Length: 266
Length: 287
Image 1: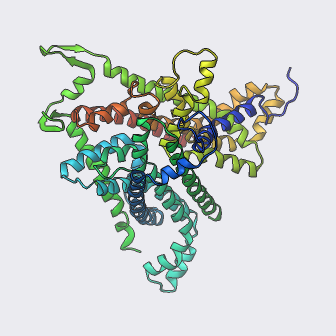
Image 2 (image 1 turned 90 degrees about the vertical axis):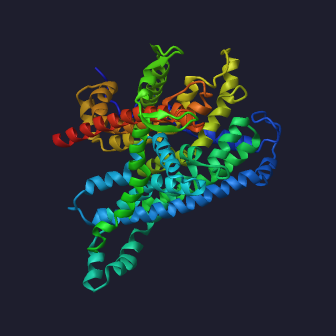
Image 3 (image 1 turned 180 degrees about the vertical axis):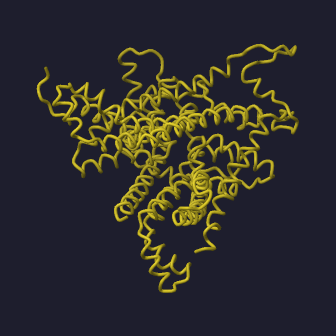
């Protein structure tokens, strides 16, 4: 016969959770730590130095890869957010529409298919069409796989929003687009921003598609970093990684706060 | 908004048709095309690529069963399956502990679980390369306890990287399922003299199952197509379907064969999604 016990407590689970969080953050801490290492060798600590940051920030090839990544990510984010916003408006305002479920699946399709298959598929199509502009290839492909990431937060925000405001605007003879611009859009803006930021991070992070579709001169940041890793690890790589970690943590925090807020207010 | 009713969907349809659906049909066509003499392919019907997955041809044109590619498919399934199981086992206690914290702590811990997920995938995999390497913390500890060889470039190293990459996708749905548990059910279990473990097995686990199954799909599907972990942590020696496809296209080596492997991978993913959809439908029918 067992004594009465606290059902909310499982011995050992707390320890597992502690170890889990330690394990989750250890790699990030290690990279950041060794980026300040003075030594040439990645993992032999000899003293504090910021010289690898100087090396990274004056590395021409790295800055060029960053420029390519930013151009692709910003353009793809704009396209994906507009496509997603437009689709979300239709799908959340016409519950009884034909092909509604199918259309929703189509928008989310990139989430369901393995990325390597999608990347290979675009590669074959582009080469058949003779579409050889590396930058344009990347922008088209990135726009497609970023769309669901922009779609989901916008969709959630639209669903959580009362339609009374929109109807009031229409009763006051606002043209449909005016009602959208002056009433709906400001209300769903947090969702739109959250979606755009997720799309941006997903595009900046992509390796598989960019690696296959890039042509000479359109190396993105992750593809460039992959090349560096293949040459062997250096503290400069840690400095680059630390800067990337910092950037993604800032953007992710912002996006998460925005989407949490847009959920709560709905 | 009547005119907008349909037109708003056109950009999404066009984008997905042009970048996913049409290209996938072309992949299917290429997988049964002839291999080009200088890489690429030629438009002749020839389903040889599928035969190549199972058989190899010697110089005299004799076919012999060859398990080389089956081994790669098996390794891919095994790695993705093991990743899914480890993520399940790990996320149960973690999600349970998080779900029983006060609301503020709960929100913070969930935020901490998702945060590393936003760090660039390549940086996360690279970090494990440092840690597991001969001069890294874990690598040195391994040598200190007398472990043989290096930890890198083994299936174990790939597994660590894959679990690390995909675990938030498991913790979140499992957490959502555990949070919905009615504490009264757990107390009822205790009142009826069930031990903690009996309650876990007979009450918590069945009620958390939908969350675990959802997480399993979210982890298993990307794990099947993973590329970075096998290339960096597996050192290229441990091929998976993802890296096999990558190498067939990367150097314009054998496009029809690469397309055939890509389609086999996609068939596996579609199968998982279909089983999942049926399960979800059955559950909906029951409630």
